[in-house]
Image (spheres, helix red, strand yellow):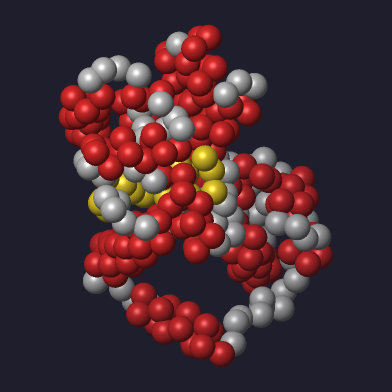
Length: 304
């Protein structure tokens, strides 16, 4: 069996004999890539081939070199004989197979402009359907840590508390960080930790109260997370912080005017959240229920 040294198209002399083989190769490559959950770009990068080349392979429009077949088989977790098998790949049966067949029939014969619109709509839908972090923002005392931990448990997701992760990163408590190095150093540690957390499995993130004051942080949250704002009255915030024994935000006197000024300063950033829930005089369980309901309502509205 001969494979051309040029991976950019079938030679006319071999087109007839190789057509069934290359069609089967393309079909098999698509199936294996789908099983691994890889995009075309990801699969091409894993195989060390160009995106254009992989598109041509899956379309049965190129005659790959043996070297590229080895790379592709390795990237897709298979062997060259399996990749080249001419028997058509197994199609899913049952409801899934029927649904796939219905979708394929809907697309069959459609003009190019309609196919372009369908592709754009699918890209938008799949992007929306991807799991995303849920990031809780709000003033200290709003309940981000308590509610965040409860929400993560209810949704069976990881919980990331940025303050604790910053402490582990710096080897100092938040209070010590502020006292020894100042707020600017703390915010830099916070930014680094946030970038690390965003790369982890989608979970629930409890942020620090002032994280949103950095526009870069706010952009990261808006890009990678659904942002949930936990609101509370200034009086309730003060009571909760005092009961927790954390007086760091209350060191300036008089306390209430200072807190109100801080809230006014941060409110425009908090207001960019996707969901807002008032936690004043509410139990963590009730707040969690309201968040889950708000998220379900939002998801339902987007599907319509």
